[in-house]
Image 1 (cartoon, each protein chain N blue to C red):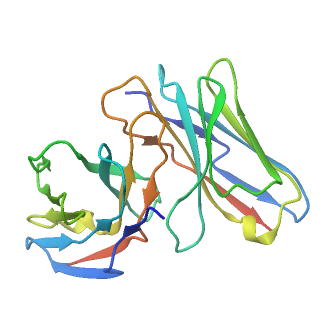
Image 2 (image 1 turned 120 degrees about the horizontal axis):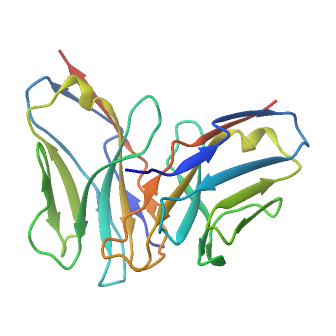
Length: 114
Length: 114
């Protein structure tokens, strides 16, 4: 079975500090995409960052960056200079080419402490 | 920029009733996905459509059906509703011919079955 695993149900970080959320996945395909989505209390799914598996360079989006280790099938999210608005549930997801569905991890709830 | 539209945003039904959820994808997106997110759970893929044809099927109960219309909007029909169908239902859209394979999520329809 192709799975996505987030082993940290909950994480806390002090405001302005850095936190890393972990994600591992299993796939037999060579071409795929990885995503991090943020789900605040409104429950809207907001795309944070995405990574193409064929790219070795780690994706970055402002304060958000990933550490993509393809051989280890690991895809962690680093949030720098954490802000109170970053508090949310974060889901790691694996997608594919064309019309491939997403497979989500179970999520990590991030708390930001003032 | 235009986003995915879902209606209604909230729906309350009694057991054994029927419900219809609607999704309007981002303009020029040809693929629609439906996901179900139960309380405290990650989104689970239900079904997807590409160019009005079913492209993939997940854990969708036989009581549910869906289709994509000529204008690319999609409807999820749910019959004989059960208490366990109470969940947030997301629609997402993407462009199969695009380069990112990124799915963009609507705000969700919150279904409560009493």
